[in-house]
Length: 88
View 1 (cartoon, rainbow, N blue to C red):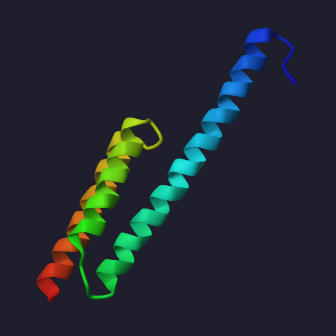
View 2 (cartoon, rainbow, N blue to C red; view 1 turned 45 degrees about the vertical axis):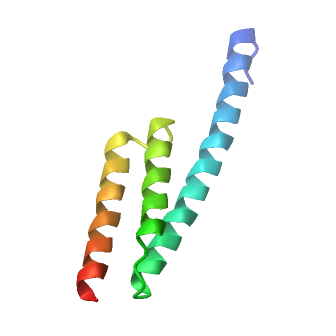
View 3 (cartoon, helix red, strand yellow; view 1 turned 180 degrees about the vertical axis):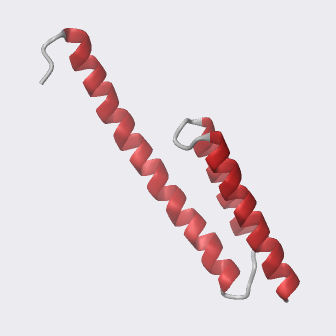
């Protein structure tokens, strides 16, 4: 374990940050999964996809996801929504 004061502080910060990021990613996965299951069930809900999009963007702005990763995920969700709407 580190002995320097600054190294101890950095460790405390990284532990906090890791816990926060893990919680955000877990919640994000749940929200996206709900949106995807709604699309696959044949009842596409734009609201669930919109909530998922907002959550992905929020995670990217907080630094949990890279902005390009977030953009790719949003794009795939939108594409899935459009496919589900056109399949009706």
